[in-house]
Image 1 (cartoon, rainbow over the protein chains, first blue to last red):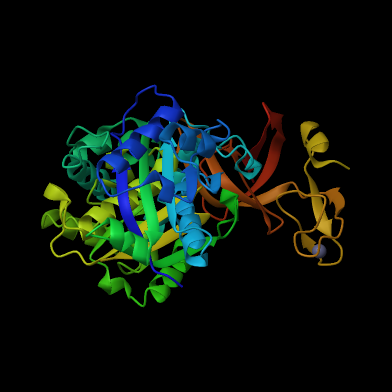
Image 2: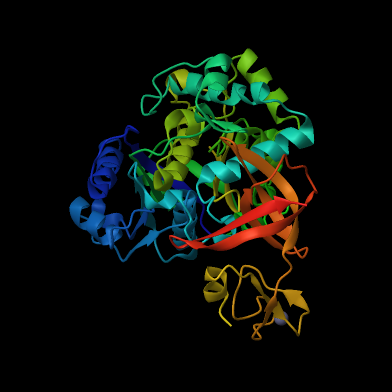
Length: 369
Length: 105
Ligand SMILES: [Zn+2]
């Protein structure tokens, strides 16, 4: 089986702009081609689009607009982890030999229909994500004796880190008091605890080892993949203070890459809401149970950017179909040592954690130089 | 019997697999373990609180009915506690979404 690497990438600014989904897709693809002059459109065997947008036939549309005539073209949708699902599909096409080079492009508009899972009637009239987030937060606080004030460090840190990410939607620093005093959505969730839906696009070009080395001097390899879907319905979760699908996906990905959680130098984790960051760190094995916030506080105090250097979802914004790709681009830049002010010293092994619908589905990727 | 037409009338009916001896949830015509057709019966109107939170002045929570059905619903009386028992006050379908309202008992 060939190694699969990242040959190029492109990303747009995340914003509240009212752009057509097709133009969001094309913008990040244009940036991908602009950033690598060795690419030939004729070498692209597959074009995969990651989005929750309701427009149809987007891979064929994007291919036509970008002057590509791929063998394989289709959309991948899995709510908030559509992006990493598309990367895993691309990886599989290349590893199987069905394709040698695959373009994956994710995009979303601020008004995405992917924000609410209409099917999940077990949530009753509480279908908006703020309700599962409230239940998670309440449960996590209870289990580990955590306060709202302690959780507020997550948005403080991630907005701060986003200030060095030119593509992030956040343009402001917030204090712990700002978070606590922001609009109360429920007893357990405030406005600044939430990532924001936005318009944004991100694209990655994946290729087999030989092709990847031919078109870039600085390839980054996907060495581990783990995925797990435990259910679709939020209420099927048996615990609300940890992420079972993330635990399983992490263990599979680390095993495949022959790595241990302690080898991870930098990670993008799916902080859809404040509580998700410590829960994800614990479920990924990057911290002990109930100690996620201790790690976050320690990193913040020492200005260590190891977790969510681009600002995570809370700081960068969350254009659903582009998020997993944007996370992967950040880790790629970190490993290429070209993350500028966001650079984590000597990053060699990176991890991406991308999940959907109250952690009912998770993807974990391990990336290496 | 049809789950949604009964729920529209304010009645919770429960799909059960007689082969596997289990409740099938979310509601379905077929068992998700053996794919045999389920049978329908009137469900218990009682449940217990697994977790809860509050929006404005209204409590809402995750309620477990008959040790297997879990739904999010309003808790419309008093201050809830974990593990506390509740009964269904109202349920139905509004704008395509199910709704459940519980009272503390
Ligand atoms: Zn059965």
